[in-house]
Length: 108
Image (tube, one colour):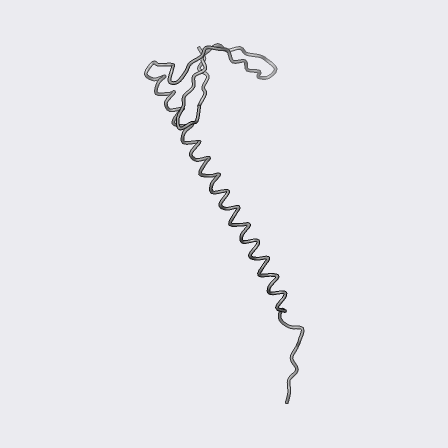
């Protein structure tokens, strides 16, 4: 007794090749996105670390009585809040660490 093969079941070779190619393209895109994201996270982590170190440098110098870690400039800061303008006099202090410059306004 002969059995008939059902020709409608399964996938053709072309369907398998196309689906494999699509899977490969999507995988490459995902790996590329992950590499870019990892680099961005590393850069952000380094910048944050340097900014915190520069801020720490400013705080240490203020605690020691020095207002000039890298530079100190007197000036005014104008703040608008609730429709009211406030003019505050003080000093702009900056600190540098690892190429990151951190600014802080210290009111008088």
